[in-house]
Image (cartoon, rainbow, N blue to C red; front, side, top):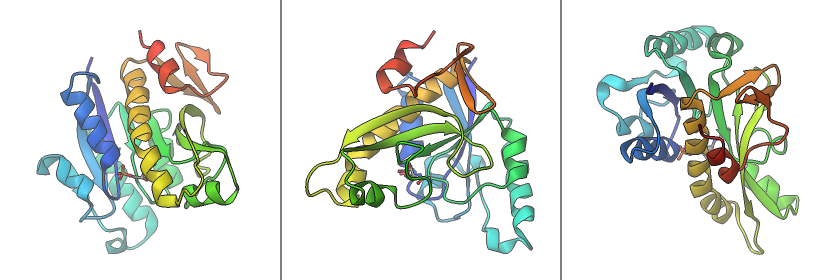
Length: 217
Ligand code: GAR
């Protein structure tokens, strides 16, 4: 059955575009049922028809939980099977996470557990790491700390800047997110406590792009 995917995005929306392109190409059996943003001008919003867009400025709500409730109601109304944070740059509150827990995914630009939070590319270069990457993980209340599902790696080259490194990583992010969503849409992924189950078996290591595709039913 076609998976219903809600996407939370704050900015450019290149990961959302990758999802939409995979759907159009017939390589992902899913439908983007809504795009939800904290930034009314986010380019991501313009990738879907108006009736699938929701955006509200958090500052226009009396307090943080009121924004979170409105967001959760809007996302819930789209009846998603999966909720995907694709460049959503606000920290989600506990109530939102509890409501969608187990079907709430995030893509983060680091090889978690390294470099939770921001400026991940700069921090990886600064640390002298030989490689960098992106992770797709289940979202839990602790920031960027949920069970990792899959990771994609790229080398860090001499002379890399955060920008060149981010540009090398981005296409891998897109492929990684789509690969994980194929598994999600196929119904073979689940979160159990702090681990990921794939086909009911605990994942001992994060999947790679290749191994994710091999696990498709
Ligand atoms: C992506 O690189 C994503 O990994 C990152 O924001 C970018 C969004 O790009 N997410 C985070 O940093 C979350 N903490 P996009 O809007 O073009 O998809």
